[in-house]
Length: 202
Image 1 (cartoon, rainbow, N blue to C red):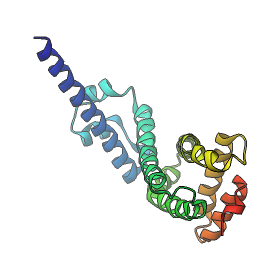
Image 2 (cartoon, helix red, strand yellow):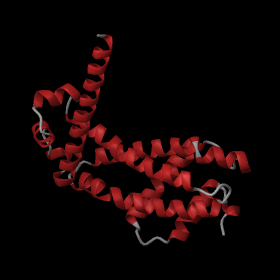
Image 3 (cartoon, helix red, strand yellow):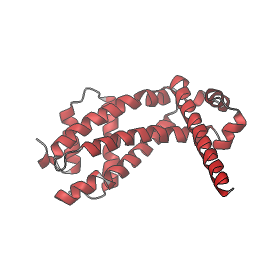
């Protein structure tokens, strides 16, 4: 009997996770079509194939779904950063910087339709929240992985690691979005200068 109850609970959890996922996917899809400010809970519920009351079982309101969508986009960004970090050649700082410039450009290109729709929709506040949250989480990830590896091999040439990376990430996003023709070499040099690792680049 206990095993049956546990199985039922597991199925309910999986079903709940799938429904929550469906709501987030639906909201993200509609956002790309017409922006968050024009979305209604009914739009999201219809797109997800459920009732409004079921929607409210998983999310308090439209704003809470917007937050979940932001996290969803940021999770995808972090997955790509994890792939970059896993592929790094230990000790080859120059190549890691070359590669992260390409990853950064790719990430900005991938998320641009999402960001642009928020801006065009007049939802600059949500865009700023997205960029700030993304920079925070990326800075946390880099501080706990790449920076620790670098510190073990070379020491740490900067202080205030999280704040430095947060500022660098925000600045690079703005630079690449507003000046897409900026050269990879310039981006790499800005990174190296900010992090005081110029001696590692060629």
